[in-house]
Amino acid sequence: MIPICQHCHTGKVNRPRQLCWNCYYSPGVRDCYPSTSKYARRGVGNFNGNAPVACEPTTAAPGTPEKMEIMAERARMRQRLWHPFDAEFAGDPKPLTVLEDSSRLKKVA
Ligand SMILES: [Zn+2]
Image (tube, rainbow, N blue to C red; front, side, top):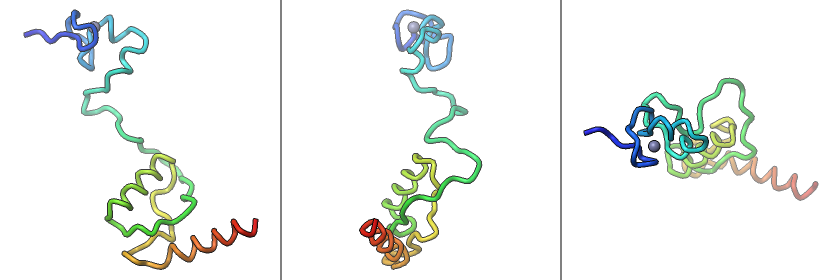
């Protein structure tokens, strides 16, 4: 069975992403279908260099879903994944000292 283009449903698949030649090279069509290659870039990407530190530390303990969400958000914002004052265990008061200081600074400014 010859696979049929997933966009026009008439052409024969002969380009990546299960597309026919015409659809693959039509502007905008290719972007509608994610790459199926195992070598494709996915996610927020990786980059070299020194990323800026996140604005605020997190009170979420390492390994928790909350911390994973914070780290994903930092990656999306192209920030460093770890803040020096992030909590190192559940209930760690270390991030609170920075958070209280920054809230005090906001009140002064
Ligand atoms: Zn097509």
